[in-house]
Structure formats: structure tokens, C-alpha cells
Length: 92
Length: 453
Image (cartoon, rainbow over all chains, first blue to last red; front, side, top):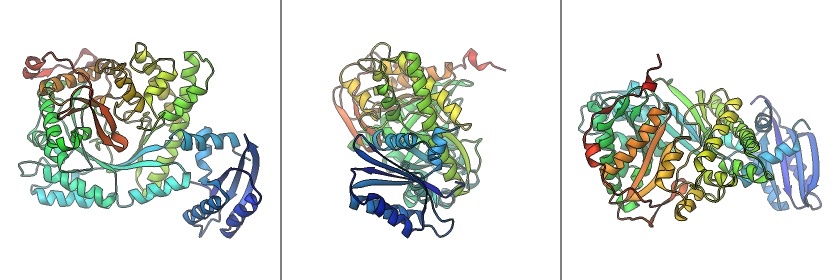
């Protein structure tokens, strides 16, 4: 694990305030958005973010729990995964 | 974005919808420094070493699981074959060693501990014999201990005395766990050409050529291959092979990154990645369903062996490109009780013991998790083992038998083990006797394939 960058995926039904509330949690953990893309695929809201966590004092487990809890409130599924898993799986 | 969103969603779908997971992170631990003439002192030594080395195994594995968002189903430990390290103990049997292994596994919170094992392909030492004689009781009075005995290799031939002994041992193990449908036999495997770095149970042990401590990883993923094949529109078999290869590549890469990160965090050497397709009882997470996706009405019908050969080869090709550390068993598993498609094929009358034996010629690993009637004679079980060992010996591959003569059950009944071990329909065996053949003992000499130097 070289970087502290994570892929955050938010999947569920679209509603007002998803981006605002999810990014609020990220701000609370001092997690910065590097890139963001958002589409509606087959009627399902899909947001993917590449995010950078602080190098020091970052509690991944607490962040994941915070994001999942906010996702539950919104009725969407939120996953936080280290970027390497996607790079490694699909690239040589 | 530097990573393609479709690839991100593909990974998430594989995990969420298609049961992609890491089946096991297995820590191999060398126990050779633990030998002692006093078995109590020996037991203390192995307990200390195992609980010391694997103290952080479960916690670290869970951290890696959270980091990558990939489920890791089992955490396991494999130790040096106990017959080797306990041989210097002055003791009648090694049941207390199995209890010690079980206690260590429970203390650590791991799912299984393997290595209650002996390597007897050319001959049986006094320690080997004590270990084999201890197996039935050891498996009856422990929960997490797994046992394996290697009775054949391509280089040494088949030790038919050991094969005869293992038929009896399997029967006794079933009888001592009769209250649990013979569950003890689900934790006992008889091998030809057993690998030294296999992370999968029941056959994992820490081989004598291994380092002091090592992390080996076993991936899963039949559900992903099954789903990928079912998306193809009227493919020919070349396209099918290509799709399996690509999918196996991705599964293997995932296993490799998880294994390396777990090993790094534990400060332990990364050993191998076993790229076996290991089914689970979950619907669709089935090797049988992959074969059916290729166009067979039911797994077990004519064409099944050819389809399985294609699958097994494509998995290896994709996997070996993805990792330079491929080892262990590495091939498609066909355990009947752990694969819902296999269970259905047996129940439908499509899949027989004889066909399964043919299938083991072209895949990993052997006759696995097969229930047979409880009154099957020990000599017939030995003969089933001998056939499978012959396939492994001649084809220079690993083969194994994990068979359950389910006490009190007959053809048409089924036995329920629960969890990953699943449910096994009781299968028909050939009623003609093999007793005189098995009684002869001796050794089936190494085949001409052994003379490679």
C-alpha cells in the first residue's frame, strides 16, 4: 500500500442532498476529493470519487463506519476501498 | 479519473453479486524446533509457538479486508506434519497434540488448523503409525483440527499398506463422529503428491521445504466465472476459454494484492497464491454451473470431463499470467457437498462416483466431500483411495480423497454438515468386493514417469 487514496462509491436511488451529506462526512475526516464522477445508470444513482486521506492520524475504520452510517440514512450504499485493489485487478 | 468507472463497478459487482472473495489467508508455521521427549512439554512448546506467531493473524486479516473491501472468509493455520515433530515424544498416541492445536486455534479465533498429518508414501515410521492411529479420536474430540496423510507420490509409488490402513481409519473416524453424520471424515484427506504450501483445508500442512513462517492465500470465484460466461452470446469454446482466462486473471490479481499486504503487515514472507476455483453452497457459486454454462444440460453428462479440462486449463493460464507466486493446488475444485450444482446433479442422477473419478484426471483435486453408504466396507474405501492415488501418481499431479461413509445412511439419504462444508447426497458405490486386492499390501511401484533424471 503506497498511497492513502481511496475509491468511494455511492450507489442507490437518487435524491436531493446525497452529494452534500456524503462530502460533509468526508470533510469531517479531512478527506479531500481528487476526482469525482456521477451518472444515472439504469435509473440508479452512481457516484464514484477518488479521495485522498490525510497521511497521519487517519482512522480508516471510523471513516468507513461514518460513511456507511450516512449512506444508510440516505438509503444508498457507500463503500470505501483503497485504490490499489482496482489498479491491481484490472492493470498489469 | 485515473481508474475506469466501469472497472470499479465491475469489481464491486463481482463481490456483491457473484460471491467473489478470498477463501482463506493461511499462515504456515514451522514446528520443528518444538520437539521434546516429554509430550506435555512438546504440547506447551507448540502452543507457545503457534499462538505467538499467529497472534495478530485474525486482526490483521480483517484490517486488510476492510482496506480493500474484499471479504476474506477464513483465517487458517498450517503446521509442520505432527508425525514428524512428535516422533521423539515418549507417548502412546498423539490425541493430546490435536487437543493442543485445537486450543491454540480457538485462542487465536482462526477457523481451521491443519497439519495433524503424516507423509507415508514410501513407508510408515513408528511416529507416522501413532499419528494415523490417533486420527479418529483426534478428529472426534476437536473442532478445528484437520488431518491429512500422503500415501503416494509419482516418485515413490503407492504405499498400499498405508492405503489399507486409511480405509480403516476413515471408517473409524466416521463411527466416532456418528452423532454428527461422520463429520470427522470431512476433516480428513488422503493425498497423492500432496503440495507443501497448500492453503486449503482439510489438506493444508507446512511442508518441510518451507521457511519458518509464511502466508499463503487461496482465492475463490466460481460465481464470477459463471456470471462472465452467461453474459456471452452464443460463444464458441475458444471464446469461452478466453473469457475464463481473463476472469481468472482478475481474481488472481485480487488475491495477490491481499496476500502481499497481509504478509507485509504481519512481517512474514508471502508464500504462494493458490488460484483454485473453490465453490461454496451459495447459489451460482458453483463449478458445476460453469460446466453447464458451457452447454451441458447437467454436470456429469457426457462432455463434462472435456468441459472441465477446458475450465481448469484456462484458469491456470489466466492465473499464472497474473501472479509469479502461484502454488498450492491451483485448479478447479469439485467437492460435491460444497457445490450446489454438484448436489443437484447427483440428485438428478446425472453425476456418479465413476464420472467424478474421471473428472479428477483433468482438475484439482480429487474425490472431495463425497458421502457414501455407512455400511461401505473399509476395503472398498481403500480401493476408492487406491484408484484416485493411481490417477495422481501416473499423471504427476495432486489427487486426494475426502470421503464420508455416513453412519446409518443409505443411497438417497443426505448428510448435512452446514457452513462451507454444505450438504452431501449419499452416493452409490460398486457392490463388488475389492477386499483381496487391498489385503495384499505392499507397494505399487513408481511408474516409468518417475524416471526423469
